[in-house]
Length: 504
Image 1 (cartoon, rainbow, N blue to C red):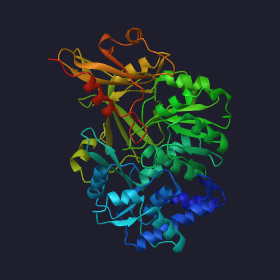
Image 2 (spheres, helix red, strand yellow):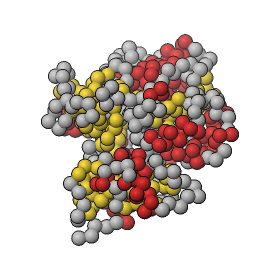
Image 3 (cartoon, one colour):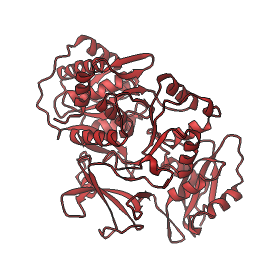
Image 4 (cartoon, rainbow, N blue to C red):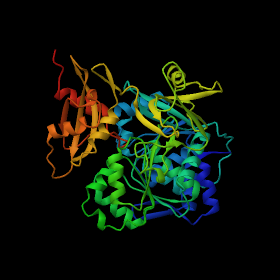
């Protein structure tokens, strides 16, 4: 059976003494981690968790967080990862919506959810269960069609959507990603991204598949701790988002640090500008860079091979192994090269649907363009070149309409980031009585740089169509981020609209 927690179990049998996790000053071998998971799973079963139940796991990047997620699955339940900084209202929504059987979390989170009738385990309870329960296997009849995870994402309406991912989908993604990244047993992966989201969790599953080691860090806010962790643990792979790479590039002593162990970077979960890739490549030319595209509904879709990054830096690559994809127009026609269309994906890595939302599921999972089965309609717009490489245009619900013309925010963001004084950029629309959407750029300057806004506007105007030139450019100290580490476009847009109210 292709069960996700089976990746850990099989690797523990194959290489029991190999390091699996590093957290703080402690290292756990695969045998030790497997024993923890088996013990916690049996304790959950004894507490009343049954096959198919939902177990909400709310931890930071820690040994307890990893144990909770994999123990829930080993007990036959579906793990529901939630960020530890979750707001009480969102946590209540998730617990009620998924009809959770159990909540494993920090004490403070348990207190915030006191009114919910669930099995409640603090981290101390989890550790006591691991210490007191035998590691004897559970006699469960499971299949790879069972749900392994429900991951809640923020929808365009603000209501979280529960993405249902079966074990077979999670295993398929782990195989495909670890294959094209060429992961191996001597890899050491630095996990800065939250375990509560797909991009972070995938670092675990790919590592467990090949027997690599994962170094757990609680997050990223300053560049120096990232560099220290790379040096100390001889990290070979780092999954990042643009904010992570901007932090690294802000460290003036970066060229003097011992980062020779690094083999590759990845970027997914947020588009990355070619200008930023170029800066990373110039600073660390020995590190292979993999721009990727994916979404929670299918984990990953594309990757750009490192030997193509300098050739076509604007591309997110071709489709990953064991999938098919198309670009379709609004009328369902498959578009030709250089045309823009919605990305449609078919493969074993695609979700089963949205939890308790058949209408949303029916809109996302529809007949494939070739008429064979169903496929995921991603709502994301792409174009291809003559060789089949994909270029992200934007989310269909983020495209702006200025002067009657469509404006893709990512194109403007990429243009802004070619300016040497711009460290980060986000482009949103604010209502305008004449323009429709007034293109608004919100930027962070490099340390010590004072931006000339008129000059910056001219810089962008030389690179994009007239309708895409920002009417407003706002310079801020920092851009808000979501729990995933991505730029929080909703918060950025709300702040921009407050600064530039509609004038009738």
